[in-house]
View (cartoon, helix red, strand yellow):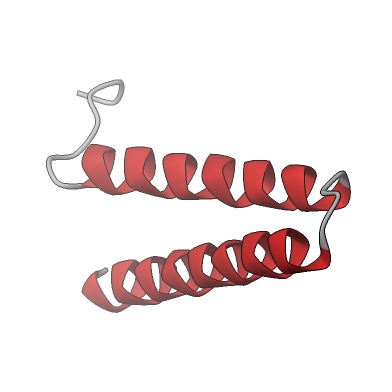
Length: 64
């Protein structure tokens, strides 16, 4: 039983991993963006992903 993930944790981990990937992609694209508006928009989206990640982590720690 030690190797089997607990029900309910796997989807959250996948969601966190995907949000982190998207946050990183936004920051990488912002670093090479040609236009200020484009850069600002990408950084705002990255910040929104960061807030979502923090919220998910907080709710996961409350459930435990």
